Length: 74
Length: 214
Image (cartoon, rainbow over all chains, first blue to last red; front, side, top):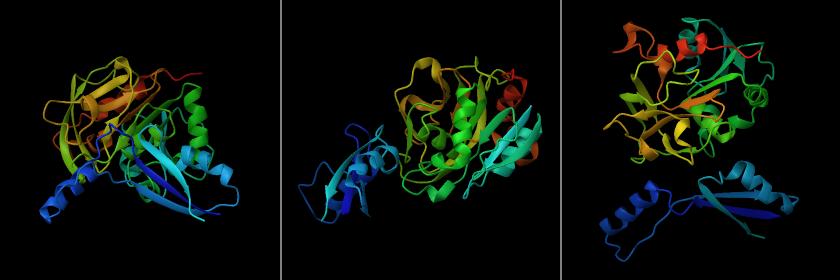
């Protein structure tokens, strides 16, 4: 199975990348942009999708600072 | 005191850590792929960019074969010092509370920093003064964590918290106080030839004077 894991900074943790993007967009003339957060995408082929959650908790994400979401791509 | 300094692929501060440890004791190199800690009395996890900082700083090094032995060594009460990337690795290994995130300014910063030694009752700080001036050089040093007050060992002095660390935290220890991690680099401040202070030596001297668990 092809899986996608979306990893994003936990709510409440300062996200300077998101802030930098949020400041850059108005500079290009885009208005009405707020609440920008920058995370990571991991795509992987797995035989046993039931292991994905464990993989996320142990390696792909750090649950202390990041939330993750497993998205089945196909 | 026999110090073992780990070398991972991408480590770059292991030579300085061995030199610093060598000033107060004996220092040997430990290899990331080798589970054997060679009977050392203390382990230093040095700075650098282990495994290219891929995924998150320290995330992959934490699973290196040598780290299984380091985790066991720490659980038995052995002294473990993590500097910079070493601190990140020990946090990822859950030997220390919290995590290190990219600096709030998103830049790599290299500068001399002043630190307040807020807990001198640890095997890593007993021979230190109340303040240290040592270099810091990192990209991901913003400390975030749920850490009890008595486990905060070092804070950036006012005006020196360049990375945005929570409560100015620069170094923390575990509950048992045998594992300590800090972002600035004591091993780069041990020789008057190479900088404005030799304050870093206090940390290595403290370890050398600590009682080694039987």
